[in-house]
Image (cartoon, rainbow, N blue to C red; front, side, top):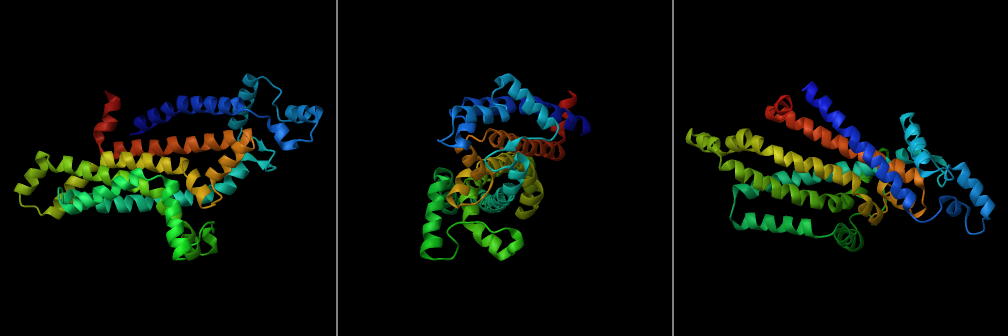
Length: 317
């Protein structure tokens, strides 16, 4: 298991290196000079040139990249001149709402999906199965901003059960915290719930047709035992793949939901940074989110190896 983990960690290095290059070049290819945006329309050419030099923008792009990369290895992700604070400090101030929203959306999605995916598989071909598949297809098809707008109109504007927008941290009270996150959680988690539901049903149906399940039935084991101890365990690998990828997608794809519900998270921070051409903040935030993405996928890969020994043994072949 240790050798498998080390090999998987080394495989991440080129991925992160390539991502750092792409993120850096994209910011430099974006039209607009950050120094000119900071100083405003009344700034002279000399003032813009002086601030550009202070920000290191007068260096060749090649040098700028290696200076940025070198600083990262020393824990310095740069400085946001717009927010007047270090990049890591700005990210830290905004990471809480995004992580809260992603975790709640994943809990909602997985709980909904496992419950209804198993139920649909057990009742394959019935109206209950088709109804669940129809709702899951709707969940995949409907855009997040449309679902979120509908939830706001119904539950916040008409029924006034939940607030229209905003965010309250957990230390303000669990009830207030959850009240502000219910609608964003459903908005963000709906697609994940739909995807995992369909994968759970499909994987279970594939496993149910295996010989070992037929043997278990022939031995007289009840249906509940077969489902929980045999079928679900074998079916869990593809389900785990979708759960891992969907969670990574929640972290990186929360920008639309955060903007719609006015949640001060990383997604909203990156969008505003792009509008201001805040190079350091864009680069730092995107790179850290990418690291989170690959780490989550690494955890999923390691769980594969824990659940199925054939995965880790394949690295010894």
